[in-house]
Length: 122
Image (cartoon, rainbow, N blue to C red; front, side, top):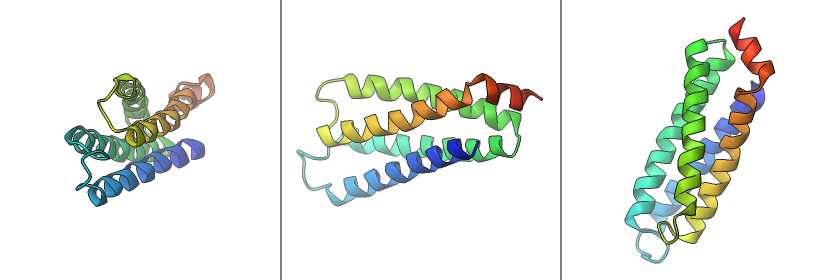
């Protein structure tokens, strides 16, 4: 679960950095829109949850593991949909969201792997 924790922390760090960038670029309408504020705030909250659940799962919490699996899978789907909508977000945020999706996809692959499922069920 060490890799999952690193991936979750990376997702959190990238999400927070993006929210800071949005704040700094708030006066540039071509770079930041209302959707960016809302979307990136939600992503930071989901990254906090993902990180919390990853650490709980690493300590052996079955509930934390279940929550990690659910949240990471839902967010991968949500990010995929959001990135695919043309013009919804500025291009640089779509790239950042895609990077977040890749980090979370790795979490999903590891968390749903037979080896990890078996370890968490015993």
